[in-house]
Amino acid sequence: MPKKFKFLGDVELTKDLSLLLIIGGLYSLSVALSNTFVNIYLWKQTGKYSDLALYNLSIVVLQPLTFILAGRWAKKIDRVIVLRIGVIFLALFYMAVLITGSKAATFLLVLGSLLGVGYGFYWLAYNVLTFEITEPETRDFFNGFLGILSSLGGMIGPIAAGIIITRFEKFTGYTIVFGLSLSLFALAVILSFSLKPRPANGKYCFKRIIEERKQNENWRLVTNAHFFQGLREGTFLFVISVFVYISTGSELALGTFGLLNSGISFVAYYLASRLIKKHYRKKAILIGGLILYASVLLIVWDVNYAKLLIYAAMIAIAYPLLLVPYISTTYDVIGVGWKAAEMRIEYIVVREIFLNIGRIVSILAFLGAVTLFNAEKSIPVLLLFLGAGHTLIYLFIKRVQLPVT
Image 1 (tube, rainbow, N blue to C red):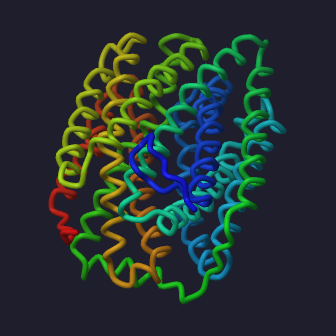
Image 2: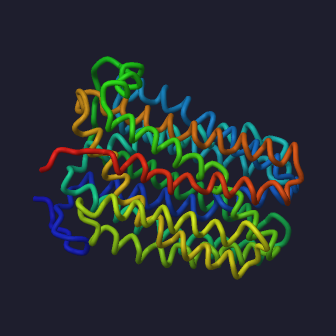
Image 3: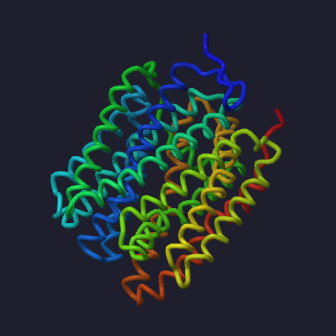
């Protein structure tokens, strides 16, 4: 009998739901330990914004291409195997960083490609399994609790990594941190063997679900919203950590930034998952988007560490407000779409393609700005434009009309 889980409401907690949350938690902790610091690791080796942009561009180009392939495989083989392939590629990325060491910057595109492939397989499978294992009644709980686990990882990971890196000379601390991430991904692979097999069948109709945007207004609106989500994420995912490091010259300060952000986010995700009911979703998305844009205004001019910490607190409140209802709305739109049960993989692939097209456009714009113009002058102007991405999500989601249940 599934257990009732009362911490986040009266929800039945099945074995697969629990395992999926634990794997998601391990992923979050591993990423929190290392991903921010990979950008700083590369920055310390090259000191060029353009190199960081190329590394992140290779990630977001390979990710949607891998999604298309992973979607096809998820229709041919077990979804759990696809998840496992993703985690193995993520582990290979950390092995490659450890092997290349102080010469990692020479292999920017290789490293970024490994990470992009890992993300593609992992997130395709994870999103499909989320769709299959959760129901409309448990989705807000799942997204909220996964957010809590991500926040816990975000609290422990950056500060622990910051302490380790500053305690050791040169790049030794980085080696330890990347090794820990590798171990966490290995544990996630082992746990994935306990997930119930989910064999797949059916024809892969990826192009048909792109064309579905012409027939299904809700689906068109959701995919457009994901493009604008990617428009902010592409650049903001790496440039903020560089700002923190430039402002302080300290990995420990970057860890403190992550601790503050995730500590507040932890509480915000808990409250969002409990308080945001279906009829409040659109208002929550609007408020979250507005706070996210207001936060950008803090850091575009005269950026300093104090402002960056206020920024960390603001986005920690805004993201749960926006993402919990936004992700649930996306799954609900897919759930009532054309042949939803049969085509869920294709829907998730197409959603991720639009998200990553937004990220690609974002990073290309950043690359153009720092290559053609003075970086210190062009980046603030660019952030004002790209930072509006999450705010614009509301303009699409407010027009989504779901059947009343």
